[in-house]
Length: 260
Image 1 (tube, rainbow, N blue to C red):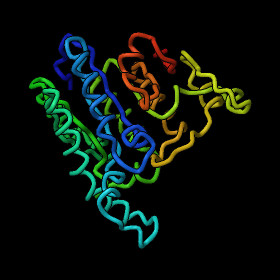
Image 2: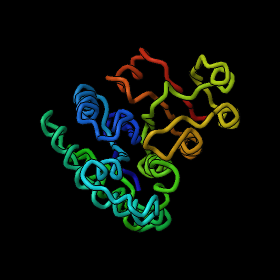
Image 3: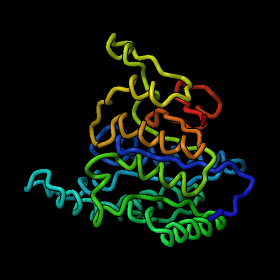
Image 4: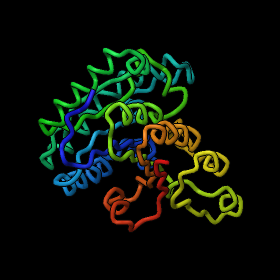
């Protein structure tokens, strides 16, 4: 299932809901433009596949289905309403900068069936070869895994492994993973680099989340999946402008989890 890799560095970029909304209740066009601008600047050396959350947040800008509380079926309905809006925002902002985008909806069951995995790889191979950026989300209308827990972290990790990417970047709302002690002392300190997942689990604290469902627990689970496939993961602060380029140039604090 080789993807017919080019000479470019393939990056799986996972964008959490908190990043897409810039910790508000609305999808931020400015943040999507920031991501697009960086992809354009890096396109000679890097190629991107995006796993994006945010469908439910997108729907909440247009409808109010909260009458039944937080029932999972309401969230699935919101995801169904929000997904086209989310894709439209991506397409509009990417197109303005000359980028082509496409939608891929995946479920965990897709990763359990050999033929499905082959189909995913082949489809994304064609898209990337033709300069389309795949934008992947969970198929929330039929699956509830990431709605309940994860904010697409695990989905992103499984996709990164399937596509044999060179780098897995998780964009979240913190400067990487902080040491437990620094959080307790209220002066956060980023773990800069590690290979030790077990020590990371002990250090990680659940991050404060406005919209997302992930927290640091699901991110470390995702990191572990990637590391087992010898993929390096970066946990970066996606709220900052230019966060991908700054991380590549080591101009910002983030956590790098290297393969063993």
